[in-house]
Length: 232
Image (cartoon, rainbow, N blue to C red; front, side, top):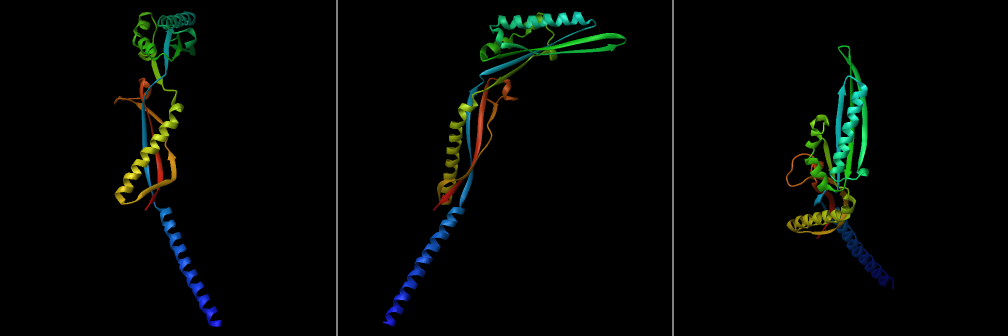
C-alpha cells in the first residue's frame, strides 16, 4: 500500500514538472513575442484648395501738415473700399484693421505720417485672386501702397474634417510597411503596441516654392509612427 502511494506521488510530481515546464516554456514564448515589435511610419496626403482669402492692404499718407495728411489718408481708405466694392465684395467682408500716426521734426520742419490698413476676408477665392491681380488700379487712384504691394494670405480652414480619414490612411500605410518588413524577416504582424500621431502640416502644392499661404493650391500632410507587434 505504501509502495502504491509512493508511485502515485511520484507520477503526480512528474506530471506537475511536465505541466510546469510546458507553462513556463509557453510563458517565455509569449514574453519573447511581446518583446518583438517593429516601429514604422505611415504617410497620408491630400491636395486641397484654400477656402479663405485674407488680403491686408496697407497704405501711408505723409506730409508736413497733420490735417492734410489725415484727409489724404482718409481719401485713400475710401478709394480702397470703393475698389473692393467694385470687385463685388460686400461691405461686411471689409474691415479697418489699424491706424497709426507718427510725427517728427526734420530740419526744424514738422513731418507727419499716417499709416492705415484695410483687410478683406472672403471665401470667394477666385474673386480675391482677380482683385489682387488688379491692384494696380489702387495706385492709379492715388493709394500709396506701403512696401509697394499688399499682402494676400490663403488659408484652408477645414482641416478638422480631414483628420479622421487621414489618420486612418496613415495607419494603414504604416501597417503595409510593417507587413513588408515582417515578410522579409519571416514574421507576421499583430496588433498595435503603441502609436504616435505626427502633426498636420499644410505645404505648397505642385512643386511651388515659398509659403503654403501664398497660393490657394495647397497640400495637407501627416506622418504617424506606429509600433506593431510581430508574430511567428
